Length: 159
Image 1 (cartoon, rainbow, N blue to C red):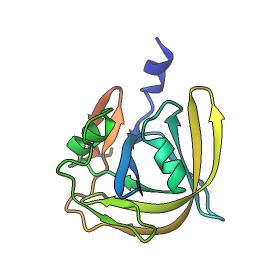
Image 2 (cartoon, rainbow, N blue to C red):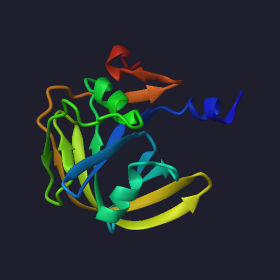
Image 3 (cartoon, rainbow, N blue to C red):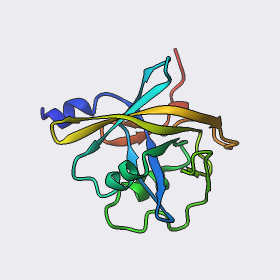
Image 4 (cartoon, rainbow, N blue to C red):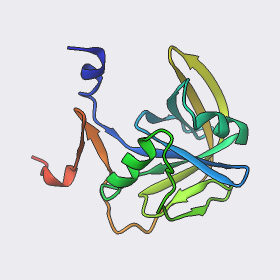
């Protein structure tokens, strides 16, 4: 079994990391997001060192974490593509820090970059949460990814 396949056995939520620079929204799909600290409130995500989107986020010094709902598979796929117009047809509004908040997301966190660490072929980015808010989303389930597929927890009842 390959390293990638082994890691695929860990279910994760899906986020879109967004920022705004030079009048343009930027963003990418990210499943390596997690909480770091309660005091101060810190979160983290990992991004490939070769990311086309991350240098703009670094330059802006801030980002939003859009936690996607299970109704946002199309958005996850759209923001995972390189070179495409990721924002085509996407409704969004500005956060308190000026980051794009994607309509219909379950939740968002507005962050300033707190630290960045090189780790192999990725960067670990830590953000300090400055604002957050639950969205008025019709869906209440998160978008999950497990073994290379999107999953729906509502389809599986708890025992």
